Figure 1 (cartoon, rainbow, N blue to C red):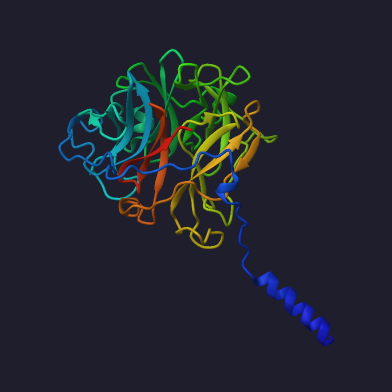
Figure 2 (cartoon, rainbow, N blue to C red):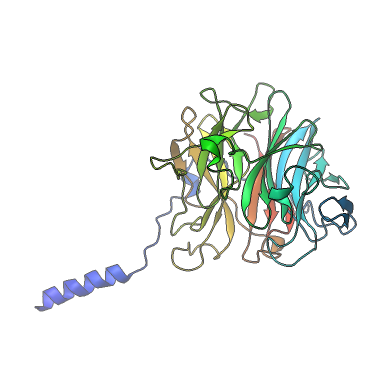
Length: 375
């Protein structure tokens, strides 16, 4: 081998051994994206654990301090001119992520930052037909959207400490809820009823009154859902949903994690998706890998928030996706608690008085808010 050949071989081997980093397009070049969510000064966290809250738990058959350990991962909507945040609350019955029991609490606000809290949870495990799916772990991580006639639809995680599954429930007042179990139990002869499933974002729009309501596209309701990847499901009644499958009859992957990006480990759907003049914006939570494939710009294992743009007429067609998160952990309480790597886990997005309020969990321990002024 002559010297030139040796030089070429060494150069090729050097290039091949170099780490490959993803080429990120800055958010500033994504004109469709909803950016500039700002944390209000001096108000966060807006909901924290309360050791004084007690209720009689039908699952344990005793009085429990139901929110004395952690309060996080909130849904949000509007009723009677007030913002209501429905948040996941954990008792102190055990130690470790997923080991305690979760229930869903209720807090309301006239201004989106100062809240009055209901003394008891409004959704909890035990004493109903969903006990098998919820006893032990409880009810987690809600997302809520409203129909035009004022019915509220909640998608949440049922956790029985064996398998996490999506559950659906409805309410007229956000306090009393009717549970229906898995949204997938009728699709494909129940094939996906007991399949691991989480994090569902129903597509919404602004109606002529300025209310954020559940939308229909091509005669159907649409929902993005998933954690390891994002699938899409449709419905005629908001209770029973049909996931889209591939040619093998398995759940189709519309969005997957990307090596070298902030969402290199997980792509978990956030609050209800919203229709805009540019397309449907789906906000989601991305988790960064620890090790090969991580995005070196962000802490390993951290959760940051991203956005995806979908076609208005074909909600299965992705038009664009942020390469950088639009919201990242910054405050000390977003980098401590149960997820010290840093977590801003978005689940609630709601509009009131020409402002958009984004509610999120801080390190699986607190609830905070960021605000975006309407242009």
